Image 1 (tube, rainbow, N blue to C red):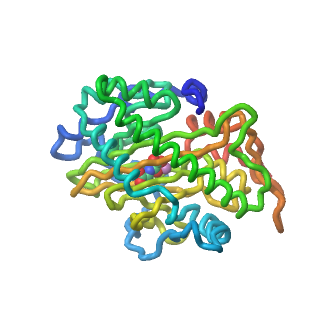
Image 2: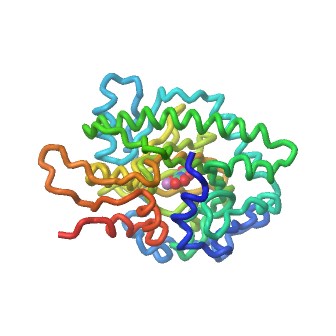
Image 3: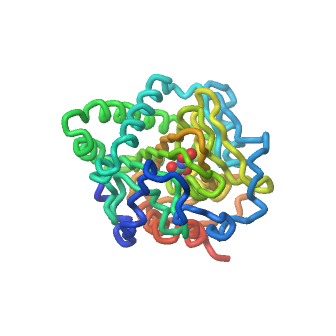
Length: 356
Ligand code: OGA
Ligand code: NI
């Protein structure tokens, strides 16, 4: 497991101000405060007004059965077209998913003061707080999250539940183990689909870089004014996301179609391409631009498991494919990319792009 300090190191040069970490006590508000009221087109300069309100589309990302004999081709097509798909027959039981949901609920339902005991430090990567992308937007999001990496699980759980931390730790560890196995399986299929021969999750003496993000989107008095999680791409190779409680919210930005809902498919998990796989695929797979919207009926929970190579792994475009016309990106270490991303967010990919 990656030492917490190692990934935090990549973030160290760009500390986040405390007021952009500490979430609103959402239970205390009856209407949307000015700080959280997004006039979407204006507050998010990157949103094109014509992309708004097309989430009615009945088209969405493919659902792929992992046991399908044609699975490699299906994954290639889905990643090439959407940078995202949903996967069934993934081997994670409903019982495991329900247990994580119940533990996450326990956590987010704790009194605000209690959650604040594990608030994410300004230059840290783990703990309770607003999304890490918060400083890049003018408005705050309708979201509280809890990030788990390495030793942080036990440390933070002991602070939250001094006499009763075992249940949380057991359930989350179990989930991490399952996610790691599924992540390896998906990694193999993704590399096969790109005809890449080498394993890239195995470093010489470092483990893959993984993190688990629990997201809570509280019920919102006016969802049309707010943003659950603003548009972004994920930094690492790919993400496995569970949308809990059959509650929609995830949307992906699709060329020519605008924002498309990715509604929970019974029993399926969402898989999306991140920046590092976009680089390795030499831009054949888009890094999925996605966001989460909220609703006024019920709290929505999601769990995102991010998978990357070891921090010292050198990422470079794989060029051995028909009609390849040269690398689109320079090679760089995972930790260098994490640092660029934490400083420049969605400009990061263009910064590592080869000119000319
Ligand atoms: C994320 C993310 C989407 C969701 O945590 O990076 O994109 O539906 N989450 O919560
Ligand atoms: Ni994401």
